Image (cartoon, rainbow over all chains, first blue to last red):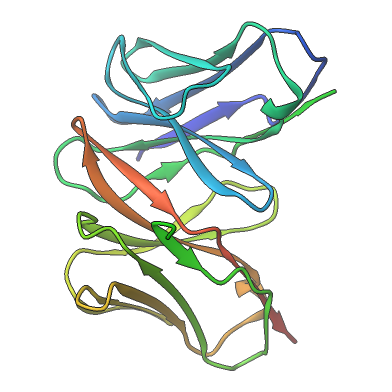
Length: 113
Length: 113
């Protein structure tokens, strides 16, 4: 069976500090990978998606970047965090080809102070 | 007009009642329609997905899609306190080989024992 791991679960970081959130998928190969952010009252916002190693598409220009160094690894980064980067970050994967919905990770709650 | 509209609630009903949750959308390019359930501080969990107009049933849950009206619904029969959560509708369209999901903001459902 497929599983998705996301860590850390919670993170408190000062303004201006760097960020690295990691997501890995097990039990499948060549997944499509996604990073979403969920802010209070604003719903889920697609930040980045990837269809393969090194292939990143950005949906919203912002202070964040994403990388996919391995087939089942997706990383969300920032060089300098802003207060507005606070939120609940979710990684997700979906199959190539036929669509069966997304499977989400358990999320990282980021608070920038 | 926002792409996906969903009443945020809260919607409070007594245990055993039939619950009706709804979303409307404006983008005719949406192909798949999904419902996710999200408990507090957890990642969303896929409940059901459908492709065509009509009904799809899974246990106590029924998903309904009306593409001509751009309207989708989720019905929960014999509602239980454990069904208390936020329910998110989501719709997919192809973006560069991946399936980008657009979410509603979610309806907060409370089932009173």
